Image (cartoon, rainbow, N blue to C red):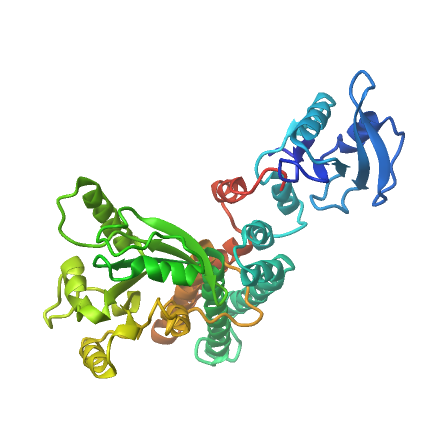
Length: 463
């Protein structure tokens, strides 16, 4: 991704449309625009109507030209935008002419990478561009835009500044101890500042965890015996008939995925084949796929038929084995039990089933896919189960952000241990240095080239 080359790419989706945009960035962008249009000059930030010519001076297309002079552009370089008509043929002909005039095909994310290299935005903001484009809910899109405008970066940079200030204080105290022999390790200054940074980091980590859920969503798998109502539940949550529902056991023979948004949370929902012993070769394959999906789920939803008095814990024990206390060997926080066909059972029968589950440490939500009874409660419980309670001004986050924040948190805990228990000033300083490095990875202050290549390589071409 050399800044010497001038790059170009189609910046709008290929296909039939009113407008198609080709973006150029680099030292030759302005000259290419002049040759393409036979214009002698362009005024920065002023849209000019032009015709675009091929090498024989025949018109390829016509439209607007926008010129952004360096460094006042998205990439920090000279940028030209050619706004012609949408359409695969016209756009490709125009792009081919731009290449003839000296531009090179942009790689995925190369425009954003140049903006990052030229300090037009940091790594957090660059990632937020892709997250805004890929957002699957309005809440995720709003959060990505807040990160793009620098709100997340500002929170990280504030803590970085406090870390650097504390590092300077510790290292200066080591190199130039107080003349009055005041023990700087025990005067409370470092401990108080360190505790303040830890508290602020804890708040950001909690916000980032919500942001990751907004960005990535959660993978929920529906499992159960045949005819428990898994497919009916998927249809109820999706609001449309996505899965075939019949009274015939084994109707669902393969996994079926559907992404839905519930209370702002994107849920990647997987319906699975009913779990049972069968001689049907096709159904057996579906059941094996169901078991694989179950073990990969962020949250497992076991659906059972209340009207059949089925025990969901028997199925959970069959899937995961049992502990010494006789309960399924599976984390209750990752398992939600759904009692379906609530409309077909009396309250007294329901109470006995609920009591048994609660004694075992599991909660159950009872619904009726036929009448939609309990569906709203189920949606709220799903969000509670995965800890999804984003603040109003939430910020988008990625797994690597959480990893860096947790490593920073661990280094700060190490610094506190070295300070309070061992009073080792040099080790305190080293832990603070490592904390600063980990936190700096988030905004790109300290980032390996292979990490940057992986991040920007996932962007779309033209961005």
